[in-house]
Length: 509
Image (cartoon, rainbow, N blue to C red; front, top):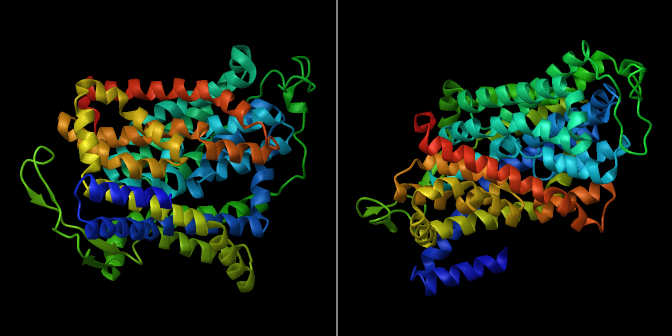
């Protein structure tokens, strides 16, 4: 990414005539934003996940799910879709595919299906991954309130959250196999979709995945107490239980867990959920905001102006940096990490060792985030995004349909919905303004469409093959997911166009 930034700075300076000092200043401005608040959320979220792994609580979480059923389809719903969404919401950045893929492979899944199913399942949750970082990052980069974007994404993706579980069942076991488990599939998908819709629209972008995943898991587990598939389905070559043998008689295996053990294992994430809800309350946010330090960004604040046709008048742009040390979401997660260390009985020495290990693992990803955000801000302030926006505006009314494809392409190229939103969020906003359609719709479409590019990004493919022992078969896994990625993103294109031209009143303001 470093060489790309150098080329972008030279392009802004030599081609777009953007002063060199301001090109460097805008890049540094974005890089600092990449560390705070964006990188701060990423770091603390992964730190919390690692605490649960180091203390053995994560293994209990894994076992509590895998013990519920021996049917491969139900296991996929619980682990790849619901639990994968939970991992996406708490850690993100490849964790769901790596962890859930390894879990499914460990349970005896065909490795190609273990990787492919996790990649397919890790779609609808991605826009709210890592405690909502893709949306909060876009809001920060485009100077837009995060809640309307969260609401728009939350009115697009729940449709896909309902479709994807059925899609997984058809991919695994065909239409007949899907029909055998459609009640459980409906419970899993509907409970997730409804929670995702409500939380994204009334709370914000931080918790839709976490709460939707928990609700989905609980609803599915409770449903399995009163319903079982007529047969236990397994992959070709595995023994399949026929209709004459009740699925309830087949044990999933593994040690039996006490309810208290399961509760203790999930407790760190329950604490995280409570704290994030508290941090989102206006009263709490106002108190914590008293510690926020804000200052104009040097050599950029009101020294760059937007002009017609991008804006109605020539308007100097205010550029300030906000260091919200207490009010930042990442700080609430850090407090969760401290409390998690206590409830998991991790020693102070081990806690700090885990902290250091997390930093060492994330130092290069954090540097990448800095570079990507810096590139995005240079792209915005130099006028490059405005130029592309004006070009895309010539597509006219068709752009509402193609807006998700821009996010899809961005995720395919960068491997991250966050990176795609940072690169193209401003572009989507400017293009929408030129076409007199809602910028909230196009920015939401960028994030929603981007999630379907996750399953074909080289980074995700590499994680999937590494987690399931398929290294060297990346091309095969890519071919497995490509057709599904294209079909699902086209569904989002249709949904976006319907919002734009059939139900515009449903778009948040």
